[in-house]
Amino acid sequence: MKEGQETLPPKPVEKTRAPNQDWRDEQVEIVIGNLLRIGVLFSAAVVFIGGIIYLFEYGNQKIHYHTFRGEPPELRSVTGVIHYALQGHGRGIIQLGLLLLVATPIARVIFSIYAFIREKDRLYVVVTLIVLTILLYSLIWGHF
Image (tube, rainbow, N blue to C red; front, side, top):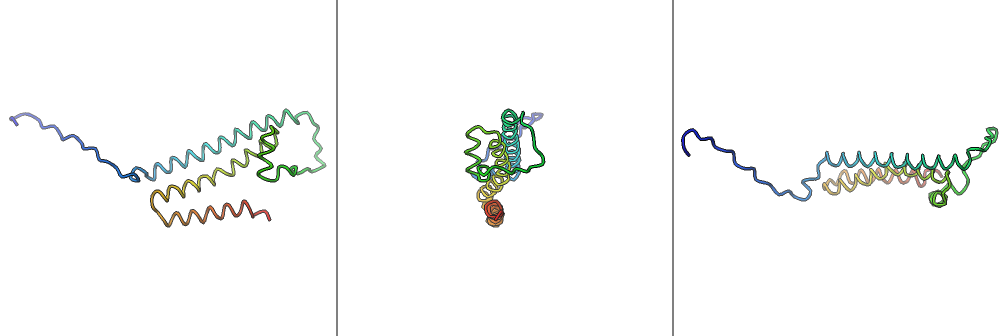
């Protein structure tokens, strides 16, 4: 090299990443945040649509506050709610939106299990499976 010439820094060499190396905690947190956000917004939209349909169906009826009427029997099971919602009934669509809202944190736990498996973190896989088991137990058998 001649005197007075500047040397250029060497070009950075692109490193090839291992398949799991790009799976960072920040990316998992972003995915989980988006999953929760989308789940809540989607369930709110379903409840809103169901509320509008419900108002068109029953908005003109007089309300009798002295008599308590619970949910009809067809809306007391998941299959009944889905069936009722598919028929276009406002109550069924509202209930479906609420089921989607309950399913959102369960989807988060399931995604967390996937993320921990991908990170090869066995301890957190086991702990998260226990959390999922408790959630499902409380939903399925908790009302008995």
